[in-house]
Figure 1 (tube, rainbow, N blue to C red):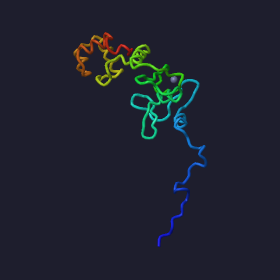
Figure 2: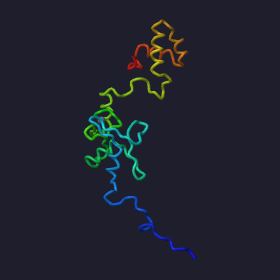
Figure 3: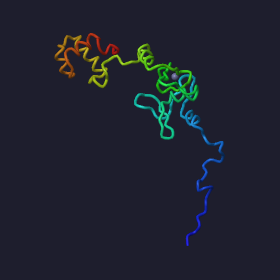
Length: 171
Ligand SMILES: [Zn+2]
């Protein structure tokens, strides 16, 4: 005969919390992951490959700064983005955020000179040190072709780097 199983607690769920008041709302769980300071409030949990914080909750994943905006100001109208005044992608401080269109995001990036002014990194086999080395070699009178062969790029690419048509941000 089977022994009747004794319930440890109501419906077999052992209570982890002593009171319902200890239950945390989504918004509490959100702010627990934020390090507040006098400046930016940086997201302490997962960061996506674009450098933005992610708030993962109940099998959903939200951009942390967008979640912060919505917790503070309510639901965002369709098509609008939450942009950073502070240029810190990890920042979720509500007063560092503003609403804009995707186009405004691009304008904002240009204005802040945040966008990448060299060749696209995924197309470029070079890094900044190599760019500086290329310019030095060219200044010393090295042939475009020789430099190009050394770095695996075309003569035109060497010339553009030397004339600062590309990689102009590297000095
Ligand atoms: Zn900030």
